[in-house]
Length: 114
Image (cartoon, rainbow, N blue to C red):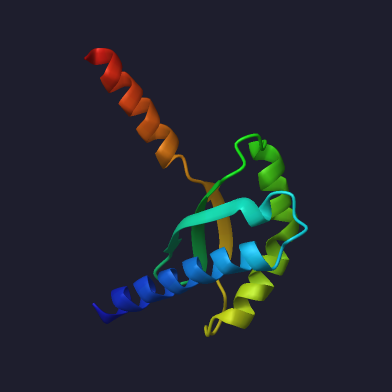
């Protein structure tokens, strides 16, 4: 039970710090400073983290955003390591959060049914 609480606290800390890092540390970036981290899911051993994000720039190409994330992944992880107190910082796997897009599709379908 206490391990679950520790994982949840760590997820919350990583979420907060990643949002701050992306907004403050990459001012010259084309896309990174417009990313919003919605959720972080850690594995039980806290060695890997799935980071779900979306971006404010609606004109942005998903592939370009992913390329910029891949190019800056080591720097993001290094900055995260300096902000959080962990024995080892987890490997970060960024995934586009499609929840809002799916919700909009469902809402459109429901409106058509009425």
